Image (cartoon, rainbow, N blue to C red):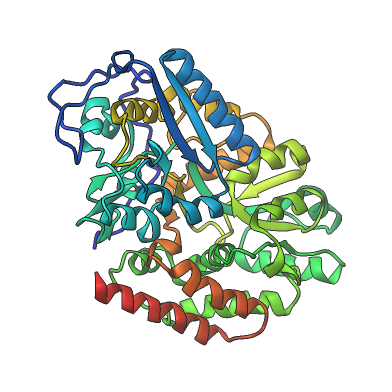
Length: 447
């Protein structure tokens, strides 16, 4: 397996290309297909490009709608037929759509073994190396970000190999906090992990819900667990575990992370109905004043800014030792991939190029999102500025750890289910860790 993805966020790239206008040679092979690559969209004639995405949150939706409109204005011969679904619904329906006779042209296929790895193994996605050479995406993006959207060995390895997608946004799992509630409690944004856990106890003792949390879909618990795990195990151990280079889910720090999550639930730091609350309802509840803190991704920031203004703050989860380099889970948003049966792969590639151009990064900033690459536009408002500062600090410190569900195709269920039971007080931390390890070992044997 490949090693950790290194400086995932990286410095700004030296070459900035204009949106959708990079020249390509006519003899460039479309990865995985015989024939030539064309970057002349007008030459394709009238095209309906079907795109499936999960950009349903307010800021994400505004972002993709603006970019789709811009692409169609630039190429009047192309009409985008957009199908949007929530992340969970997209994961449930995408495999069936890709296996049909008339799949979408472009889809957002999640990184990792469960989605992108399996789709590559089944021959459902188009290798993008030829388009990468035509549009020079590798000159635009740091190697670490390209590696996250790459698959090797026909689906047997992730984190390197052939390119199968491109991402528009960066992602951080961080700690949101309600500034007004912290002030009323006489607290400040925590500088250490101990200070954070003390703040949870103070909030509980004063009648406040410490952490707003929805875990109906199981995956949120894995992300909260991962934030704890980063502090107890460290980034190198987490990377090695996810990428199959060493370590076990039953190693002491990983079991301790599960125990800490169980302790939070037992002490009332999480809402008692957490396993019945939908993931996307968590920021809605938080915006209404439920919770002093919330652990979640930056993709919620645009909606929270609209509803809370400067009352919402964001930070990298605090380190064990004050001043230690920042670490948290994240990487980049779901990549846009071309399906292997697309009737318009050249137009699909031009669309992906447009979505990941420097102009698109400025659209991301303007709509309250976090661009994957440095944009010339700067964010406005306290919350977007918090997130931009966190992204830059993580970049400088090489502080991103991969999403844990990348580790096996079924980990979202085989570990997410036991974590649900752990939160409900129906299992123990060692048993939850053992369940993840069984799935992990079985998967590694089959690779």
